[in-house]
Length: 238
Image (cartoon, rainbow, N blue to C red):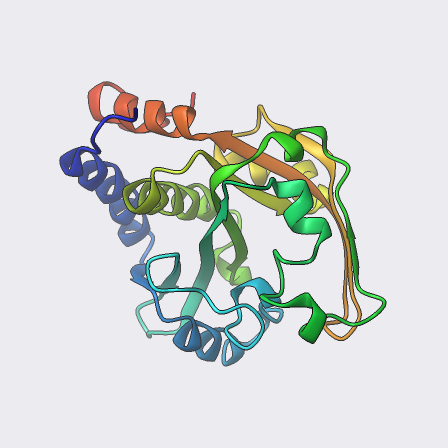
């Protein structure tokens, strides 16, 4: 049985990353209405379209099962976005969920194109089950890149995910180039990444990906927050 979540620990954990964002001139907002999120991201220049797993027209997210993060500068212009949702895979696993296309569409028989496909070859995807926090749609405006924003956004996403769901796993699918550039290292879970996480083709969305799987366990997430509260005010995954 999992222990009770300490709200003060979560508060301190989140405050650290919110303060870091403020020091960079970024005001963070967290929301739960994905219609609003999509309206914001669609109006944000240079951001690519949000994938269907975070769009209510293709994959509605029930209240309490998802949240988003938006950061704005002093002119109230968007400089970062991120989205997180919880998949209940108690009777399935991530590999099955991806390959069935249910990770992207609430009902693939209605929304998927006949030629849509997803192949998941990452071995660990079959072990990712239970309550799974999926982190995606991360974007940073060009003039804010190279300033440690991924570490801040990941910290906020991890903390809110833990407070809402205490998940069994937290995972994401990322391009190899993000690993090569060291961006994923800022997520502070570089010790776990596998190729073949999602070889994805969504015809009508004009999406063709070959992404790696990165993940941490719920126990590791809880340990990070505990260590941060006791002795690690800066890099809790070091």
